[in-house]
Amino acid sequence: MKVIKFGGTSVGSAEGLLNIKQIVSAEKDQVLVVVSAISGMTDLLIQTSRMAASGDLGYQDNVQQMRDKHARLIAQIFSEDDQAAMLQQTNTLLDELSNIFQGVCLIQDLSAKSEAVILSYGERISSILVSKMLKAKHLDARELIKTEFKYNKNVVNFDQTAKAIYAQCKSLPQVTVMGGFISSSAETGETTNLGRGGSDYTAAIMAAELKATVLEIWTDVDGFMTADPKVINNAYVIEKLSFVEAMELCNFGAKVLYPPTIFPVYHDNIPIRIKNTFNPEAPGTFISREHYSGEGKAIKGISSISDSSLITVQGMGMVGVIGVNYRIFRALAQSGISVFIVSQASS
Image (tube, rainbow, N blue to C red):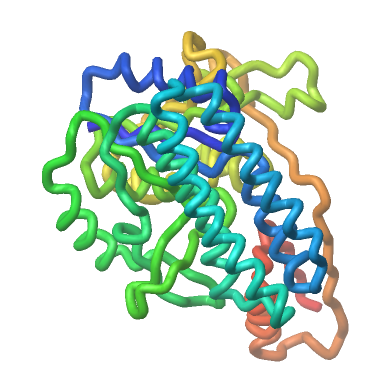
């Protein structure tokens, strides 16, 4: 069993979709394909939600834009005989979505629950599109990935998720497709999600539970680079990384992989391979528990974080006072802010 995840740019164009078809068709192993929403769809859903909540009827133009985006892909990928059925299925989901936007616009209020449902449509549509293209079985991620509300956000309930996957994935066909990012509450069954980058995380969870031989993440770059190529012109692909090295690069700015993705596969020693959908012949980056030398180089890669904020908290009144750090980090956590580096002195 191999788990293969394709990102938004991979499923967002006819070229990418046709490459996906070739990549999956060439696999001899049993394959579970996890897909993101088509590129730009999640941002468009968020923007449209905000417009509807403010009473801006321009949200209707955005819904039409969503219809047009998917219709173009369907026309480019499917035969004339298959296009009508695929368009009908897509438009049925987009009609549902349009009705939700209409309700949000009428009451001019967007609850967290409503937003979670709205955001689910990106992956729900893309996964159906890809499954039809590959003539593969389709799984609804909401029936597999279960969450609970902790630390002011939805986190995976691994016990319930494992039970759901075991119950529904006992005998999968050669190729199965599901959406990433989407989940549901283990307690209520309501639609939730794993946050931005959650499709990578979905793929890693499925790889761990299904005991996959490898997790492949197909994106629009050749792999982890030695530096940001937009900043360093002669940056090149790092062929091999350890899990720890990859996690450090991700946490400090490298956007190739969503950092929590590493956790599920690390414990089961399932390697990750980063590949380029638009350059499948490139070797990519291989990530495992092994520590590889840097070919005589002391530093393997450099990552950077832009738009960071530095907060300095100081004062003689804090010396010896118990609980100051707790209060600071609690306030940040309640606002969903992650602190990536801390330096502390006595005052």
